[in-house]
Length: 116
Length: 116
Image (cartoon, rainbow over all chains, first blue to last red; front, side, top):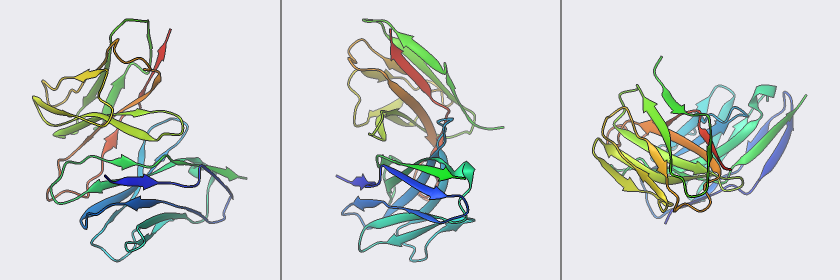
């Protein structure tokens, strides 16, 4: 069975600095997708960034980028120029590809605090 | 605007009582999902439905039931058999997999269920 591990329960970053959140996963599949979701205090889940396993290029969305290391099964999220609004719980998620169901497997989350 | 509406926002259950959480979407998505969120455990899949009149158990289906009579609606019933129902419940929807496998799930704002 696939698993997703986020080893950092809490992280803190100064405003305008850069922070990296870690995520590792375990799978025997070769076709899959990885996601980072943000959950602010409002509790709504917001997609931050996604990565297809078949793509070697790391995904980037404005201040958010990933470091996808397929062989190491690592999928870290880098937040540059951190802002107060980035404070939230961040979840890493995995989904099988190849026409399988769209079920997501989530990690336990990392709570990010942004210090002014 | 398209989106997912969950109601109520807060719900209280008495011992031995069944309660139903509502989830409605106007995104024209075929697939819908129910997740349970507990502190320190991330999101866990309860039930999912890929198409109307069909649904499958997720990882923690015991004590829950669902129906999918309409594409837009996927209500979740927390039965009296669920001995520890206190949690935050999130509903999601998505386009089915296949050519659109990288499409994310969209989430509602959640329902917090507590025992009286």
